[in-house]
Image (cartoon, rainbow, N blue to C red; front, side, top):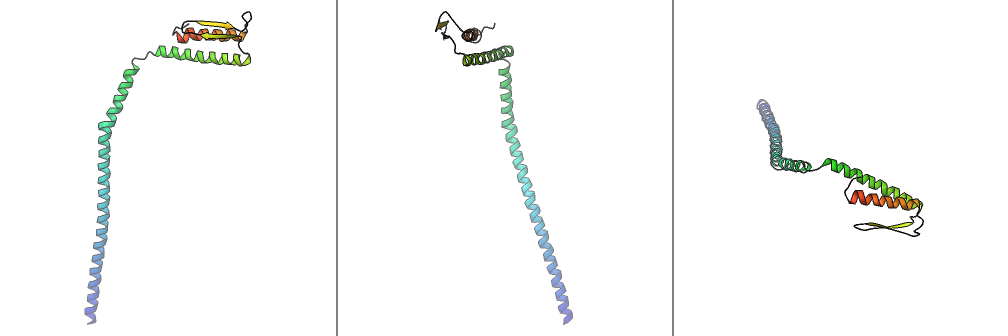
Length: 151
């Protein structure tokens, strides 16, 4: 009788071992299946993103680059450089005039019109150097920048 109980316990241990092995293999296959599904989802998302990128975004970027190149072909870069230099001259001239005006107020009032520049002095017989620099700066500004003629 003891021999049959021992054989039954051994058989039960073997069956439980097989069940444990089956459960661990099932858990491993389930984890492997989950991982493969995750990889498949990532692949499909990347494929969809690549489709959107190469179908819509890259042609749009190339179209914009072609448009910029087309517009760039009409730009006269020598004129842009000359205009930029003239603007820098104007800014420096205005800064110099402002510094002169802060040091000594002008003795003349300058009226700019669309066709002419008229000067009305407070005292028509005297004019200070700062008023002359203001007048010359405004005349230069009118001639060079507003008339688009280069000195």
